[in-house]
Image 1 (tube, rainbow, N blue to C red):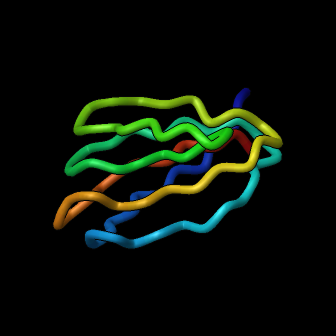
Image 2: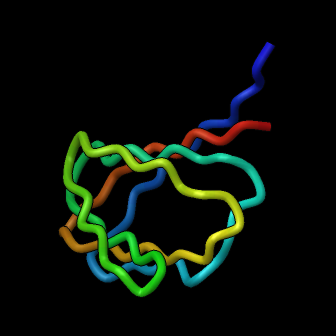
Image 3: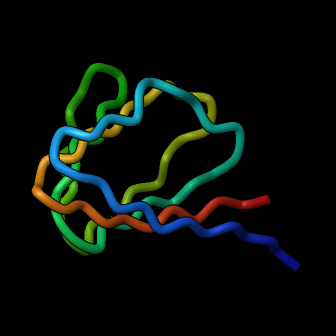
Length: 77
């Protein structure tokens, strides 16, 4: 049986999750707003209903672009 953790995160415009890495697979789904997912010095703009599989052990950063940014993170335990 696969065990998952889920988090909802609500950010304001220009909120930043500074550079970090994940040690387990994570799926990010934007539910509202728009975020800038920065990975390998490339900017990936994600909008409502976009999903992104965050790679393991790769440094990345997230920036809120809209007034309200709501996204779901699902992580394997």
